[in-house]
Image 1 (cartoon, rainbow, N blue to C red):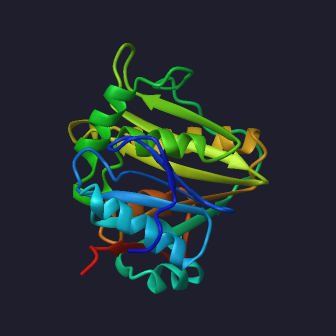
Image 2: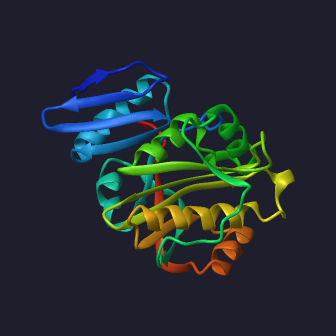
Image 3: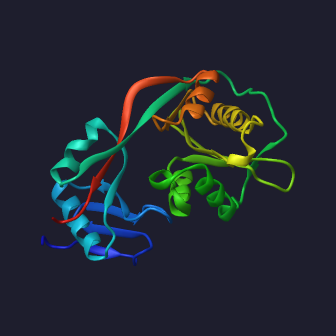
Length: 241
């Protein structure tokens, strides 16, 4: 085994790995999917491989990458990762801050994470569930970010996480309870997210979705999003064997 970097934190919480200038971060993939996710802030494939070996010692395999573009995959492949899943990338230009308002959608300054995680778990299966750590990470991934929730007063039937920086906006997550679908909540959340993003300085909104999520793809198409032809890849390292 290669020299192990210094490690901050304890599993199954967040871990920070450092070796010289290199830095990586790891967390459980989600509450319902085995293994971990690693982000390499700075470092090469050798550093990534040592991080994976350490995670294997914690029984935190398989190790997954974030969803990354093809141009970023060579380092992961050199560290022993293989492509596991992929996501479609969609985008839409934003024009001004006005979008049709819907009184069912509101911004929450203190996200009710337990309820949001429950909705996310109900809306997605297996690998695609994010868990609380992943959802909090999505909110914190841009300089500006907000959680929108939708539903009647006193209830939450759906949510969206949207961020913006450097003129771009990102619809990080959209989920509606299965039993609440068909009421236009997904449409209302996306429109509200576009309005917030435009007011936050975003000129282009980017999102990703699963290939087989046909209702979501139809919703985005109705709202003016186009598929770019690019894919995001989730890479996977199964273990040191």
